Amino acid sequence: MMYPPRQAARKDPWKTTIHGSPLQPSRFMNHSRQQKLLQMKREEEMNHHSVKVQNMTAKRTEGKPDPRLEAVEASSPGENTVSPTPPPEQATDPDWADVDEYNSFKAKLEEQALSQERVRRQNWLRGELEAQLKEQRHQKEVQKREEIECARELRKELDLWKAQEQEKQKNALEKMLHQKEVLDAQMQERQKLEEVSGSGLLLHAFSHYPPKDTKARHGLLH
Image (cartoon, rainbow, N blue to C red; front, side, top):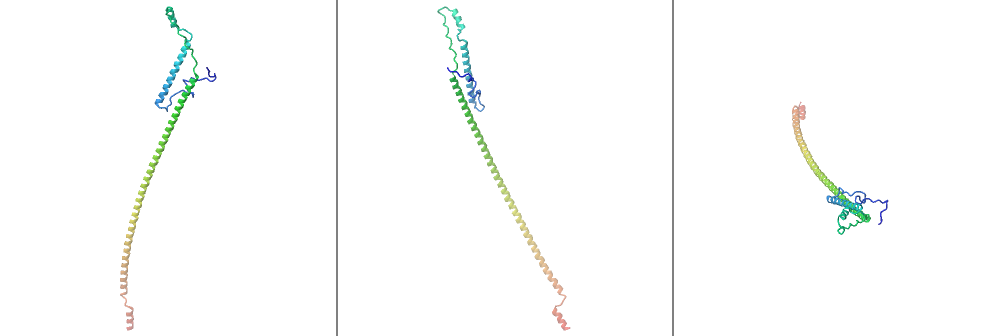
């Protein structure tokens, strides 16, 4: 049987993994997988303990008869004597091929767990990013709708202000036209009055003087 070299001291395969860290359930695993890994670890520890106990028992009883059998042989007659039990088989070294197979199997399990955790993490991150993008799109749509509503309200207010200004300008123009008409009527009345009063004054002024031909006639007569 080939043994490993002395400088390549092997660690206990029941306590360490291929990465040198103890097998512990990750906080990212689900409950069922954590329980499964813990159950595997307990079974490995119990199996390792039973193998150790068997090896220690075999080494302790190797080549030594059982004292209980010696007492039976001393107290029983010759033909009823019990034949001594054969010595147990000599303890052999562990099969390193099995150990390597176990380590490779455990490494595969860990690699599968890591890949599953990586995929689960990627899916979670993808879901978070999609949720964030969806929320951002929703916020943009809400903001766009609010801006459109605000623009509509501003447009309504602007149209109302324009209508009010047009109404004010129309009223002011009508008022100015009415005032102009009133002023024009007053001016016409004043002009008529001035014309009438002016003609009356002239007639009154010239009424004291006789006509020119009359003067000439009077002169000729005198």
